[in-house]
Image 1 (tube, rainbow, N blue to C red):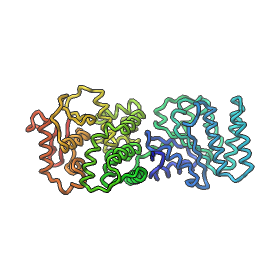
Image 2 (tube, rainbow, N blue to C red):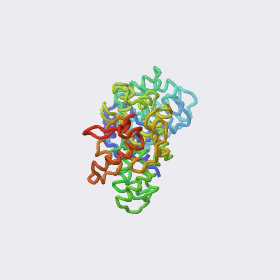
Image 3 (cartoon, helix red, strand yellow):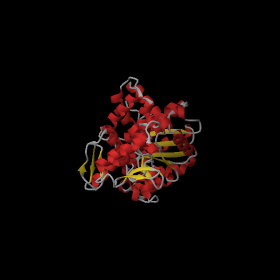
Image 4 (tube, rainbow, N blue to C red):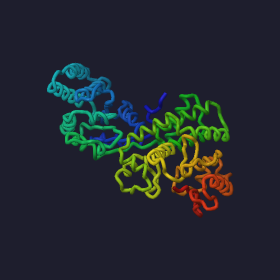
Length: 445
């Protein structure tokens, strides 16, 4: 069972969108695939989540049988009629809505259809709390396919009713990144002042997600398991579920000790890059990005912070960290991006870790087989290419957080020396795995 249809956490997102909408403002909700936009929109429209001041009405644009203005407005009307049926106590109003339903569905020309829909909207505004908020979910394809007049009609309804009517439009991309005709611009002008980027789940939200997954699938997740999930998925619900599935397939239900957890993580980690669910989620995220955003990820170290594509990636939480040391949001998606880089530059020189094969190469030549700890150190540094990694982070990511107080500098240095012996042309004069005095180590191109 998927938990992606359930909103876990995001209280600040819900409060911010609700506040704008209840003030009569239109809102553009932007978020990459499987981040929880639909779950958030549905929660906004749950009767228990509403107050007497406004009526949130959920409209699923994916449910439209065709991408036409008629189908779009019928979808809106059916959602309004259902809301009247469940929230209105006036029997006469419900009867009027039922009669209007026949007239709207059966209208055989555009003029009659438009006239009857406007009557239906006016009826909803008469009997439902203000503002009436239409939550247009999965609006991307509808926006790109509907006839121009559709957008003029939406703008006209808003102009007519003012703060009594508002729209929330959920899309994967910002409207500024979609084609925009003059007519579409009339609607986008309403949405542009309030763009809300959906955030990722926090660590606490991820813990709750893992707990629900464990209960549904009858598996057991320890604190170390949850830290493992967060380290790989970084709060993206789709990736969190993918890692939970992979981990759950190995852990089962028994209670384990820290050593067993560590062994399980060592078994699961190398297989995540090739896991079907992980690859699907990463590819969805990648396809949600425009070419300039993809290029910015592939060249993150060389793209200025002021670049519009990089700013957009940061707004979507795909890029994090400081301006000087930007990082891609999760270990798994960072690995995916790195494979895209290598696919575009198959003959690139330097160190390359093929996580699919669990092997390392230097200048195209495969290096001697690495031990588990050697491989974990190299892949960790590879994920932080050209950035200094302190000894604390090395212990945490190679040995595990539970060994922070047990692994001393000498053990780290010995491990680094073993890796150098396998990847360096001359281990006495490191070219790729270099020491940064007083700070740690880094892998360089």
